[in-house]
Image (cartoon, rainbow, N blue to C red; front, side, top):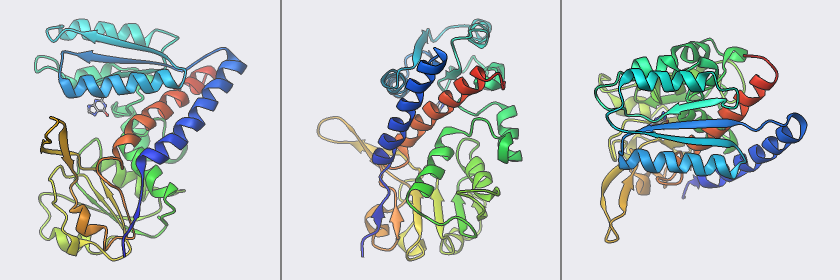
Length: 298
Ligand code: GUN
């Protein structure tokens, strides 16, 4: 039997529709629209395409949006001054500095310079701490983990008491999604195991998973025999394994999809699964930030 596909593109469209209405409501009642600035340093082609998509999505929702392009050789001090300018700009509710940054700039210094109340990426240590505390303390959950949780919930997967196994321990995906799934509350309350390159027997852990979340960055790492029949499989991997005859990147996930879909109950495709959710959750965090600023809760 073939698994139900968890289609991130469809779920994205539903959430963007919800957000668009919220933005119209905000504008009508308060005369304010969410403001998002994306700062791009240099000309990294992948970063350009991500930032362009973020700005187009923001525009489609009716945001006030600024794409601030800076040259590769901008000094760290000038970049910090730019962030400070947007920290003080009342029309801006979300600041995103596209990563990676050139080597002469400290990513840590830059991320720490963003006002935590405008940190819609959720990367500032204050927001990481809030996520760890959980409940009402959480302000801006990081976008990819937030998107994963939405996919799990909106696909009707039971999380309470479920065995969740997270493959990968990055700060952007593995660690935060593990914490989020272990918290008390809706779409969580799971028993979570994190496995990584130091784990002795990856297969034995994956085989126990009711929900398997794979963010390892290794194409085809998870074999079909590691998948528990009927489980939900979330594949976060976006690995470029070559280019097709039209010169377009061929993408593969971290899971052997064709075989896994015959065993899992629900599974995300690559592309079209987790990918579209990240930008969507960035938009959701920016709308949330605008509300918090309107209500004076920052
Ligand atoms: N580069 C790749 N993904 C991301 C992201 O989610 N946020 C930022 N700021 N940079 C990125």
